[in-house]
Image 1 (tube, one colour):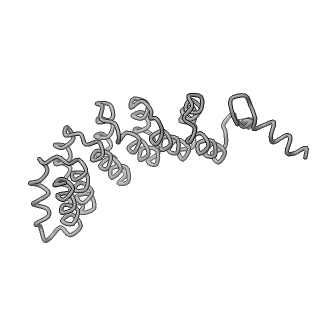
Image 2: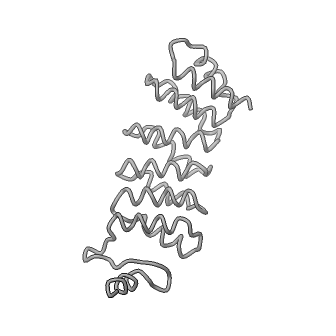
Image 3: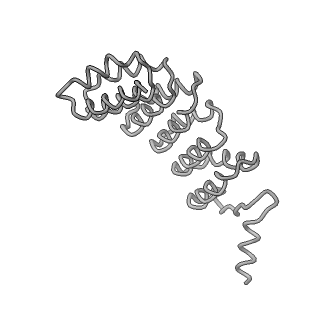
Length: 199
């Protein structure tokens, strides 16, 4: 019973559950992830503020979880997310791409465009998907340049992004890919993209 009372006193405060910090002053990643999960479903200003504070956590999995939670919630300023698009962790950069994808402002567009040449394939693919979901015609010329990459998976991802973008200006490139017998995955993705643009 005493242990339960100690635990409850550590977790309860006037502004919601918190934890006593260890001597290092940093909440362990596991505990921080629990807080992210709890705060993600709370849209109150205090919860959103506490969630944003966790963006400074040293564990990349915590920063990535916070970005995913903020992207699913009321949102966060593109300037803040753009900082994490440059994070040292690829996991955080991928999460930043997802958080930026619903935005169409110049800051979000620039951050996504910069990650299209990231050294980590997963980040490039996330940036490509974000570029398509932004549905920003200003990104079409960049996507068309990237389409010339020799990597089959990259071209297929580019075709998918062009389909999501939905700009009819991409039709000639997609049609050429769809008719190419030598580009299996790319041809399939191009056909699907043409269908998406037609609707």
